[in-house]
Image 1: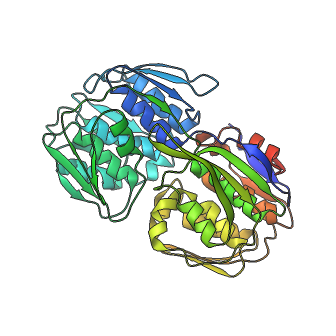
Image 2 (image 1 turned 180 degrees about the vertical axis):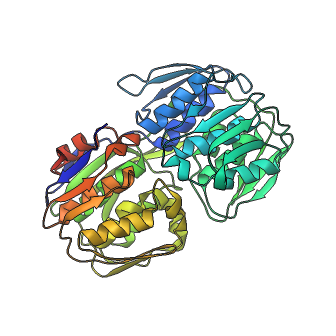
Length: 437
């Protein structure tokens, strides 16, 4: 397969009204929970990116009948019940999806059968001990490759016990993994997180009728319950919207509206941070859809100012930092990000890769162990490498809006994992982006 590179012309302004693809986190969970529910679950707005499609294929491989997705992102899942999954005929390949492998390791830890979970080159480098260690405390039997990396061999037949787990690092994936394992465990499972993380798992389990009690930063559930099928309307992904929130802020004379975006308060760190930098962002038509808060977001050009990003907002914007680094590069003065060491173990080392790329296009950016120091100024343009990371590729696309020369971004095939038709939507919005030959 030939490498896909983006060539983005400098300058431009963003205008129009758009709907970005469905939320990846909610799309994953809709398949997982619909599969083990009693009855038929109907999903609309499902994200047809590679990551969530890999989750869908995984549950088909375990005997779940799933219709779709059709062109409108409609999926029908014929649930098999909490204990109805069947052993797959072969190892399950989850591609690039950290969410899939971490959540599924918990969901599968209490099954009667063995299953192997693997992924691509990038996923095979990502740390899994953060989920396999607490699962082992619950009685799970999971083998990993050297260094606690994938593939994961989940050995069936384990008698699982509920635990009270104090998480060493804030991570929605780890929290979700333990809660899903807790459904198959005897007694009560509680997870306490050091900082608030996205709560899609808790909200959706409650929507499926499986009660999760949340008190502050502690979430508890009792094992042995059942899920009842329901309808899910997946809102647009705020992580995908974030690229246009920054683009609309940094490009002159821009005015865009992004429709039906999920504004779950555990995910709106990117909006809070941009507003602290002086962004002109309005939430319109706020409403609740399937238990998730949704709004239309209007963004207009603004002169951003450098800030010290409050540490309590970091876990609420962890996936949006690649493009927030671009916002900082376009801001007046210095921006300091700390407490974001989680970025070093994403699809790439997002601190180092973003620092390398920003420096390559003329930005004064200094990586630190847990973040970055960026002095805003001129973006010259040039060539950067995404390191096969979708969010890096899209972030540097936005940087071209303020560049003096073309920005060429190498290795962008993985954009399809989270944002199908990114190029089409970006061009319609006013960015001049082409596939470089």
